[in-house]
Image 1 (cartoon, rainbow, N blue to C red):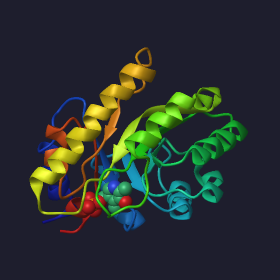
Image 2: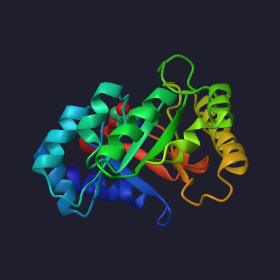
Image 3: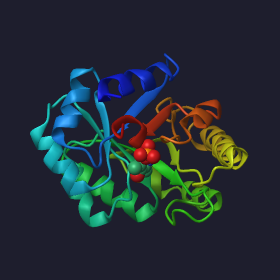
Amino acid sequence: MSLSSQYKRIKSSLPENGMELVAVSKYQSQEAIRELYELGQRTFGESRAQDLQLKHEALPKDIRWHFIGHLQRTNVKYIAPFVTLIHAVDTFRLLEEIDKQAKKCERIIPCLLQIHIAQEESKFGFTFEECRAMLNEGTWQKLTNIRICGMMCMASNTDNEEKIRAEFAAVNTFFNEVKTCHFSDAPHFAIRSWGMSNDYHIAIEEGSNMVRIGSALFNQ
Ligand SMILES: *Cc1c(COP(=O)(O)O)cnc(C)c1O
């Protein structure tokens, strides 16, 4: 199948309203990204800071670039001038560094808190307890150049659909708890970034409003 028919197939399988598709282009050439751009896609996800910097320089300026991978503090400076959303904030120190670099660029950078839910696949992300503790502690409210806009997570890499569903459902419940406790008057706290190529159908049923799809899109 061509990239264009694959793109249309995936788009038509997503809810029409309130759902954002992040095209995960981390292993893709500029040509492939341009092809999707010509079809109307504007939101792309990358997971390496320097790749993202190069692609941002080379490609149309109205692309919204999301950083979706594990971000090291030393790399924040490369993407701070232009990144639209950082998905995987997994420590308070990273949040502080993003705030610092955003200040230098006179920007406010939207961020998501990565929640660790999968069994062993990724060692990154806050547990529910760690996330509660960080938010209750409160210093994050003094970071004026970041905006916490929601949560992201990755489910276990398994064929067990019920397990995946239970993980997404647990994060969705946690999202609602945090929204009530800390963001009840913050309409920007609204992004639920879960679902990738193999599990986005389940993710959507369990509250996702932002799916990050790479291989199902590009590897025909
Ligand atoms: C690579 C990646 C994706 C896309 O994964 P696919 O299985 O190729 O759809 C989504 N989210 C993150 C954080 C990734 O690193």
